[in-house]
Image (tube, rainbow, N blue to C red; front, side, top):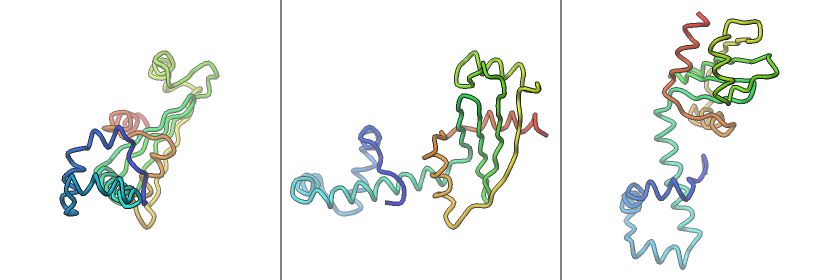
Length: 156
């Protein structure tokens, strides 16, 4: 597998797409049931291939990722040629960015000495989707980029 197998919930959500995928493999519903019973390893392989196809499609489209922890925000803009990072670090020990109160404090105090900013960019490796997936594996979530764009205006 190139990425990660979809969860049971994700597979259930993508059931119509999975049926279409099996159809492209010329696998009928009856054949699928037989495969699951008699050759579970082949059925598992089909699920893995489908999972990779779904991830590939998602990763091709993703433009922004966010990873927010107690004291840090890592905001990524995934352009065609590179990954851009806006990083925020909170030095106030009483603030947790994951809470509404903590994030509210940040919005009011983003220019204070208790907030540090860092920007960076990095070219993709051999496979940019693998690079994107690594960021997701580390806890980032896909977003529309509103927070990144807001920060970009502040930092400039």
